[in-house]
Image 1: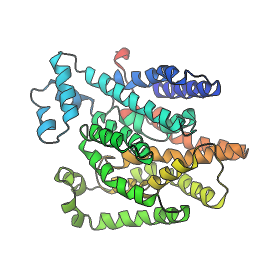
Image 2: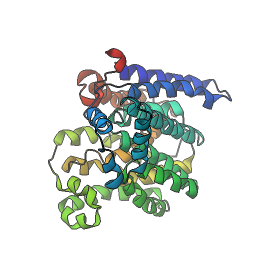
Image 3: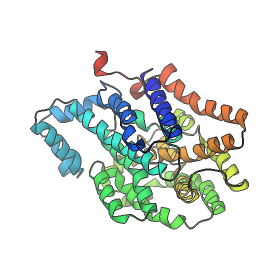
Image 4: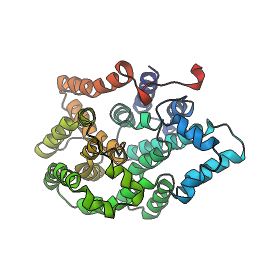
Length: 357
């Protein structure tokens, strides 16, 4: 119920903030940002990694592994800073929640500049992506995950110096961000493709990934050794295929509208095209997670981009006054969320706070 209250409060606040325009919009974002911050900051034994981070903080020299083995220097020095002032172990979650919050609301502000509706972006982010819930556990990784949309927007804007700084920031919190850096040249190259070719590419990607899964041993030599364990583990999980593939039907409906109908939207067409480029080659990466125990290591970086086709569908149906379609689509989007937080709340979907003790 906590998640439902937080998600609803922030969505409605952003809706009315944008409806009644004011020059102080960015300042007034402090209130929803505070709501966003409180949950992860004051969580208590949510998910599976809560105890692990407490153990890292309280075990002598355990943090040194993140400096010498993982080279995640920002994480290392952050923990050392907290330890120097003898702050309680809960301070880890408070600091990381602050970082996550700043990154998330930076994304909203950057997209607002391109005429995206913040309330609808947040609504889809909260309902569709699993980022808010998984950041309860993946403190380090979700600094990198939330940095990914910001980095790609900066690349789109050709702000390369800021892009490099942000990439280093994310990389030194979680080394898996290297995979995102390596994909950027592909995104820039594919930006030249027209919509039809992007759609053809998106159709081809599941077969590319299937080839990778069949012959993964051939690729292990090209993967940093720290990720060998993820590639070598296996264990097909059909439930993951169902849950992660649920929104595929919406992706294909988006392509039908995008290719066969006149483009209708209020947001910037060019940046949306760039986000479509990203979606085209990443929408089916969940297939890797289904076949190998990567724990969402790669897919989570691109889970955010499911927002954009859904955003386009919802806005188009509203503009064209297809209200029956709109109600059905929104209900279908919300249903899995309700099941996860109300009917089958497990791990990070079952919230507990220090204030509830």
